[in-house]
Length: 367
Image (cartoon, rainbow, N blue to C red; front, side):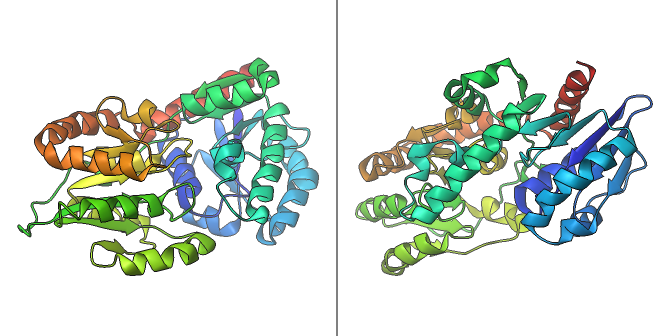
């Protein structure tokens, strides 16, 4: 059997990490080969393996329009030439006239309540267009991979016609860099909370800062570290709040993913205030690090964290404040929960992700 991965729209970030880990953990069956289609820089950044054939094309270096033209006019001939039985599209592209499996990675595309948090018509329209594109990819696919049960139920309920498709839930993995290695920091008398995520409308850093402002009235030792890139318009709106709270809120900007685990080591607790996720990899990283987790009760978060965290409504300042107080007043209880949380997160391995992914692809290809 010959399987293919169409990764023309994957450039960096979590998509590239997922692709790299799949390649590293791929275990071919007898006589099986994997063909990888991607841009030159992506191919060069991925590991070389005898069982993986890398295939690029000049059009994949020329932007989205040429990427689409390549998928329509070039890819079908290449797939036939290579004898590919089935293609996997982790970026959720619609592959014209080819048997393929699509994957869902972005719930902002489907959750209108969440995308309507964006004040910009341009942002909202872009996600609406992406929803159409993603639906067409699912509709014309031979199978769909989801990365959380929450996403599968939401999308299949919204589009019942997709229920006839072969589908499966395969959770992403987490790097061993995040395994429990908390360092004993010097006694400073402070309680450091960490939130790693893009600053954005559905991540609710503005609500979180106001909750900390209330918390500081009774617990001046509490401080918040924010790590991640920022949506430009949201950061502009938030800047005055950040400036006014700089005594207890520290925004570090974007940190390379290879260095993020160092922030986990220095924190006392982790906060995750997002209301829209597919599979929250950042949450799993925090769990794996052994930190107590104060978590949004939206989306797939309870599916991932189970009963090992403290939940709150991230759209409510008072509810967030109450959760922070509950943690501070019961630290030992939540440290014990963090032990169970870390053990749960250890099950999210890239080896398991790769095995379940390729097992599903083989099943669909045989059908």
